[in-house]
Amino acid sequence: MAKAYSQEYMAYRMDCSQNAYSKIELGHTKITLIQLFKIVDVLELNLHELIAGEVLAN
Image (cartoon, rainbow, N blue to C red; front, side, top):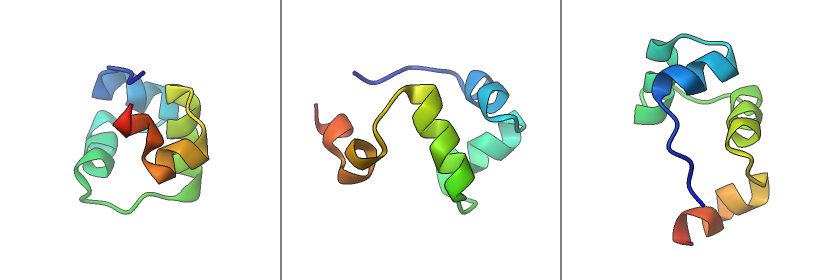
């Protein structure tokens, strides 16, 4: 199930600014592995499922 968190909440949980998270979300900045792991943790997802697109398809 997809989570509907605000950019402000995601940024808070990832310890970055809302502007920095927005740039990640929009693809304006490259994501680091650490940031990817934080996103997966916040969204309570399995990294493999996220990369494979299985979460988005369901």
